Image (cartoon, rainbow, N blue to C red):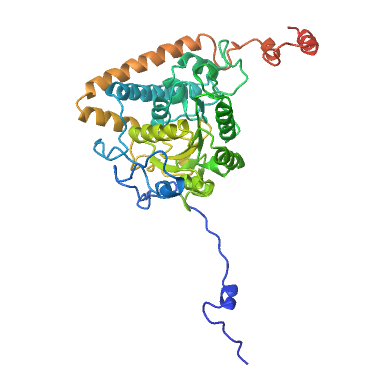
Length: 422
């Protein structure tokens, strides 16, 4: 007797179908041609700008589109155009160039064996510089390890950053942090942590404390796309939602978490900004290579926080042009054509192009500014290296390990220091 065949759509038919998993794949592996046709980028000026007191559930669509201000020709379009002076734009351009030049010099220093490790922010300069200029100077920032532009924008000396990378005799952190993990309390920037995503709950906690004490300062923090899969990310969003913490929660989606494509963290199922929706938070997804979009979105979120309307999630859509760090070789896992074909361009070139078209800047002025910045960074580097680099033996005295532990050293510390010969 023939075995009965299950009818399509019945429970039996579904039970007999083999289960499958989905494995996210990047635009291209080494040797392949990248395909960005599925990005679905909104046109510049096409996304509405809601009032800051709009309810989060009324702007869910803003997590699924892309806020853009500059078009491909450098023209500003739409409701998100911020009020920003030409002087500030020129300052922002110089700060981005300084950040890139600093990165290039320190990358070379690492390759020359002068420091053990370095991380560049090439292609992501607008994310840190534009945000820093949009925030108040005393708003507390909790960066990850690719926002060196915040330090530079707030006037933290390049010499101190270099000394920290070299762990030399003038290292402000006395050799206690690995290179690039700066700390600049005097400019309202929290110490960088090597443990991913810890800055998120720290930022929310600081923002809550600011509100509880009747202060007027808000907090802002940054993590990468891969960090959104960490528990700390979700703990922070829960606290931010429940207590209406005055904090800006930035997600830098640069497409890669070390060698893992952003789809591994869930980026192909929904934009990372959409994670704020489930927590009842307003969420924006913006062009991270558009200086104006970053400035405007940060300003919008800051105004909400200062009006006691709570936190905002911002996904900054960008591309990591270089390797994850000096320990990484991106050619082993992604196409070398990806960065060249990234449809949102380069943040420095785009702002420069806009200023030239506006008639307030020129290629000659830009070249002169670049040369001036290169000379300044080179001179600062020479000065920093005079105080020591890796392997030269010029480091902070080991006796400093007993300092800054307790406010007042107790007898055990004194005994240990004497035993060590200091």
